[in-house]
Length: 325
Image (tube, rainbow, N blue to C red; front, side):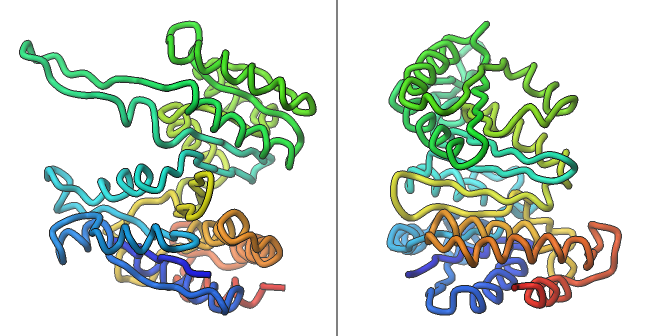
């Protein structure tokens, strides 16, 4: 098996090196090939997603991304972040999984990733009006709903579909299709919650949720909220899956250029993403669970500066390796 590793920008190469070190222990027979993406690719080749990188990703069994984004491109027409949008679209990884656990919370956000507002028609009219279009086809909703129901079966059998059906036509269609899919999953308990209420419940009574199914924009916001309740974006991992390989796995944190090159980046989110890659990308459940447990122990014992300590990136990796049992 083969992994396409895209270190990217800022602290991306540092956490990617941590991932590579851990993969060498847990999956020594899996090949890892590095490729340019994001700002590093723009600087070297003039494009955030080179053809060679895309081809390598398509040929891989899984794709592991570090981070993209550099301040010098913030106002540019060509931006590092365009690589991420392009990868998601080209690999058709429509199901974004964002687990959130800690502080009494254990839930999974299943976010539709390649449709909706971020991918709809947009533009500016002659009178200065600017528009972005929210669109979904029933087939897009059906496939993400089935993925969420299947995942709910592996957990507590509870699924909450989040929409805005009291206002949006897309949400009314979303709710109808989810209900149709639910007929095939009588063993899963389904409820519907409006997105504004879901945001409140996440803060007030997060234990009511197990699997949250929602569309792209709502999922973007709610998954970050859930991460904030369980340690912050710096510790959050994600998996983006299609109907086959490769999946795309990445930490949720940004490129953090202010600390890049100092050896103090917390690699926990990247290593958690590696665990998701092993489980969902390569079907290696046992080493995935070993890595999850080791990261949890390291987070309790080895604190990098973002957690109020003085440990380096390498110190954290050493702690994880020491607790791989």
